[in-house]
Amino acid sequence: MSESTEGSNNKIEEAKNKVISAIAETMDLYGVTPAAANLYATMYFKDQMTLDEMRTELEMSKPSMSTSVRKLQEIEMVKKTFTRGSRKHTYIAEKNFFRSFMVFYCQMWEREAKMNMEAIKEAQEDLIAVIKDPTSSPETVATAKKYYDQLEESKTYYNWLEDLVASIRSEKIFEFLPKHKQD
Amino acid sequence: MSESTEGSNNKIEEAKNKVISAIAETMDLYGVTPAAANLYATMYFKDQMTLDEMRTELEMSKPSMSTSVRKLQEIEMVKKTFTRGSRKHTYIAEKNFFRSFMVFYCQMWEREAKMNMEAIKEAQEDLIAVIKDPTSSPETVATAKKYYDQLEESKTYYNWLEDLVASIRSEKIFEFLPKHKQD
DNA sequence: AAATATGTTAAAAATTTATTTAACGTTTTG
DNA sequence: CAAAACGTTAAATAAATTTTTAACATATTT
Image (cartoon, rainbow over all chains, first blue to last red; front, side):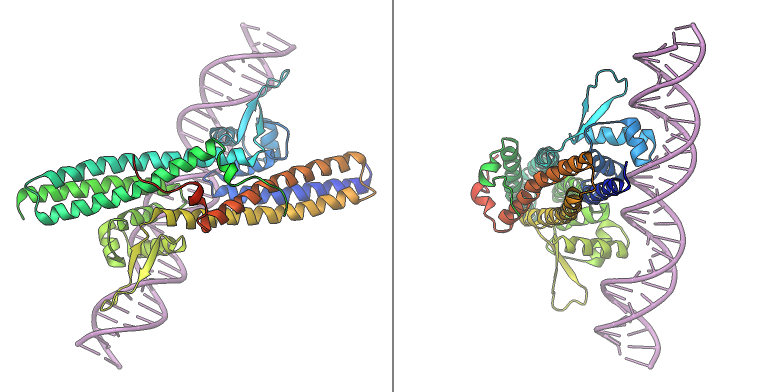
């Protein structure tokens, strides 16, 4: 290879590294480990990778790569692919950020809505019992009512969150907010 | 206080605790410390609190409360209020989850879009230089073009994220996805 | 002005999380 | 069937984060 083409190749690596760093840094905030974040960002520029390639490329241990790739599969940012002829498992990165967004946030929000709604329902049942209890003092009943109403009010938010999830899953959101190029 | 009203009050505490636990647990995933998560969830059922009340209620150190409350102020889930007559600072929790959602995600997504767009722009400049460089081999040029196109494609996503942020900030999103009760 | 109240910063300790090394279980190859 | 390849699990180490204790700065009261 000529020396100047080697320079061009280095420049390509440099360009990739800038994007890899940025992706990995923002992924940190998504609750994945640095290893997983770096791994995904690296795979974003690869067609497919095996565990051994991962650990060579990132200079990390194999179990670390194994764990990271599993976590990435959970949030569907990486898929396992069958490669005939190879004993090694091969993995590819999901390169469509829209799909990653969908899976990640829908999972997260659904969990949040479900958990909190469950707790709210139980709490409201308790509060109703207090309100109906004839031995509760008027102040106690008033307090129970206040909290009941506050919780009732908050349901609006969780309903909305669930609607948001549904509109993303069904892709209806893209009718309201279309995908487009430019900038 | 009669014994049965005391029981009712305990029941109210129990009801609150269920919701506090659920909120705190989901907040963990939002990148705040357990102390901050518990603090917010506790404040959600209070009118206002001082640092000393916080540490009494959560049985934690004052610096921990001080740090937590500052973090919560950053993401605008807590505001400082002026209470005349009191030397102590008083804080109130933002109880409108819609507003918390807006501030938190808009901050997060804007940061992500900005950071990654910046990196993409720089990377694309590098890649164009490689493509234009007459000493680059045809394969190198092809590779550079491939990455350039991949990055160009991904811009669509970041543009969309920014549109999403704008539609949340302007509240236009609620025309598409209205807030409503029921369930 | 001294003593107290309030909140923050800095250093230390404790806890949690991430990563690695080592061991293990399968499967495959020679 | 023994040896090697591959991946995972478990225990140990390393690193990072969270929380606390202690010291400090500022303002307020007496």
